[in-house]
Length: 226
Length: 292
Image 1: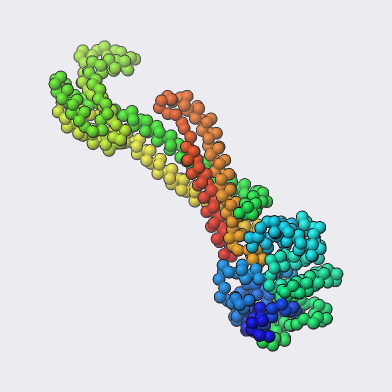
Image 2: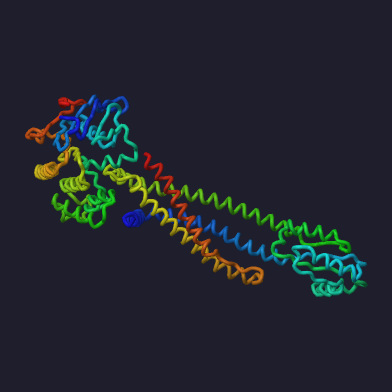
């Protein structure tokens, strides 16, 4: 993997919470348009690793480059611009309970200052893709886990992100819902996005041709070839 | 911009209770401080009308001749700041005194000769009726030959002027304190709104919203609250003034005091201050909140 083809580079990254080590000496390259699984048991550090990428948490030591941006040198003002490179699917969906399905997805485009008429068109088309176009005015509390996850996926890709980060995207879903979600990931991957999926579910990683890396107790089991 | 306005209005309705607290706080502050201001404006009008009515009485020596009197008059005319000079003969003064002391006729009947002196009643131009200028003019006039005494009610004039200045100072202090207190209360109620929405704000930041995108609706919201609070406060003050004012005006001569409300410019200024109060409260709490 050449340096130029990497969209994410992590070099000797450490993350500590007080004296507790959450991640230790992580070096990892993720190529543009790669579909990568980060696997490992619960509490291994997968979510922490993802959080470091979109600066929900700062690194304790080491360097992270995202699309050429050095995260340890990025100013506070540019953090939103970094986050717009990502479409994030959170483990707990993180839909805003006081907003409808439509409004939750539209919010991403509103933050980018896109015209109302374009927002409406784009959001409706995305919700059609995730098969949620009949629940536009529903509030998250009235949706099932699978439906909320599909809305979260639509929101994640609404801003045409370069990288999709999914944290345990099928953790609380039944098999059918999980299959729909993965179908969507592959669809966005084919359209050019880099997809990083953190999961503890071995069935997802056992039958894939994509790269799988393992994290155990905060360390990478299989070091990438960088 | 339309998006921010829409979101601000939506937020106000979603957090009706907390927003009502902010509006009521601003309303009460505007009402109290404006009431002070209104009192001050009308007291100043009253003071001005008194000042314009102030006369200097110049009493002449008992043996002043006609020529000396005319000479004194021409000297008074030469003093700048003096607008009108009227001669009040001792006979006219006695008649006036009799008129005013109708109920003490017995006192007047025992008078064998007129004890009152001839005098000049002098009114001053508008720019010369401050206590300092009046004192200066009185000293100059006292220096003229044939003048025995000069009176211009300096004591009550100075006393009223001092009380008025004290009120002015108290008004500024109370106004300032209310402004700070309102900013503080507004900041706290907005902080409560922000805490109620902290999860939403957190999610917005995670999906790439800038701080300005998060802030603007709150700025608009707080200015709108200030506008509504200021408007209601002024409206309430106007209503109170109409009710109380009509009663006061009946007991005071209309010439002396006509209670008036603030000018439209002042009303806009007060509402603007209400909006500024809301905005400052919002700025403080948002600055702190978004840092966390």
